[in-house]
Image (tube, rainbow, N blue to C red; front, top):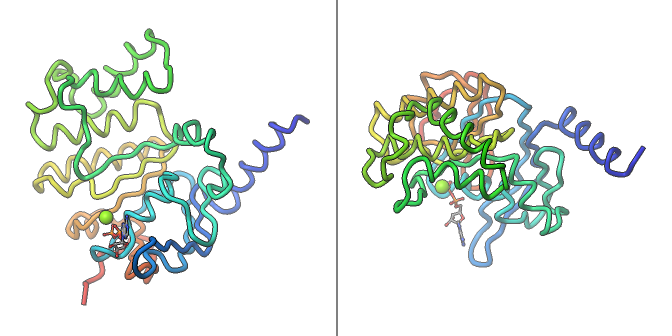
Length: 247
Ligand code: ADP
Ligand code: MG
């Protein structure tokens, strides 16, 4: 068996045993101040839908950044798709990130480009052949309900539409995991529900979905697994959970 084949099997065993996301006693200390994460243990299985909730400053975004390997853990290990991110070499980060789709509160679109270009751009970065791009972009725009708006400049769209473009961009490379950090933070209730329903559909199609949110009403209505953080630790982790009242 080749070394590469051995590595692939090892990663698959890791995913099988520990989950597609696995944090083992993870600490993160920024150069200034107290720890942002203080001993996080968390396992997320392939195909799960998980809400991460908690007060502002509890470490939710820090955790997302560790999963994206934007940051490195100060202590402990972060595994994503069977890769130990503390050991992942720099040159391998771009390839690793192809497994991940990510959506933020502030959309982060290219505002001088149209909808189509914003989504196609994500495919060009990973060197998808032009022919496939022409096929994939309309398909993913249809998934998020924006097929007819492909020519619109993103700054002419409503917030809900902009977030759907961001979602299409996150999905077009068919990631195994979708990470969303407060994706409905800038949206009204109706658009928030639409985005959450899309995330649920994406999950039903097999993608593992992790959503950081403050939206109590949606969390309580959707009956998913809810992980609650407080001051850098997980204080509750419940299947079919609820948004726990802050004290
Ligand atoms: P949340 O997303 O739950 O609001 P964050 O992960 O953004 O929390 O922040 C957790 C803690 O880490 C906070 O105390 C925050 O002030 C601190 N923090 C976040 N980013 C940085 C940074 N780049 N440098 C220093 N401290 C940071
Ligand atoms: Mg945050």
